Length: 228
Image 1 (cartoon, rainbow, N blue to C red):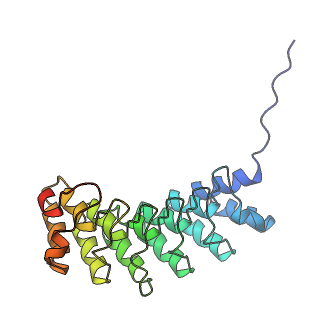
Image 2 (image 1 turned 60 degrees about the vertical axis):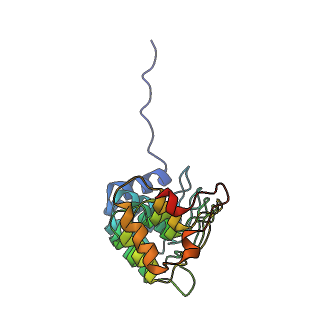
């Protein structure tokens, strides 16, 4: 007669600490990192730490516990993203405030050379972007990704007029060409959404010059004005 299969053993401590973070189980989290402080920055197969999972699962109290215990705020996963990248991607203002208060480095770039500022442009709400802008130093607003695109390019692409206004107010350069030769105006004018005219106007108000309107990209002779 075949023997009964033995029950599975306890999950590895690394798995347990990630599970506690995801589930918001603060008491288990405290118990684990107190017994073994190295667990506070333990990476899983994606290179993600418990702090990163707190961001993904919106477990602010567990994140505060980890940070108070000395968890690294700027550690990166296999995509080179930090907890701040993830908070910006999710548009989670509470987490952005917490991480920035713990000296999270918003200038860190992921594998696509994107910063948290780039990722914050994805959200309809301008609050995540506005919060990050308060932490910028001179000349930092125009950090470029691997396609030479700034947060202003992405705001124009996503048709976010309020984001565009905020970035221009922060002295973002409206004339920077990306890898295709496109300036933010090209991306705004290329949008099929009727509301894109607002985004276009925001950019034109900043520099209503003939040279800007006639800036031609490297791929065709079409100007931003003709695309509109």
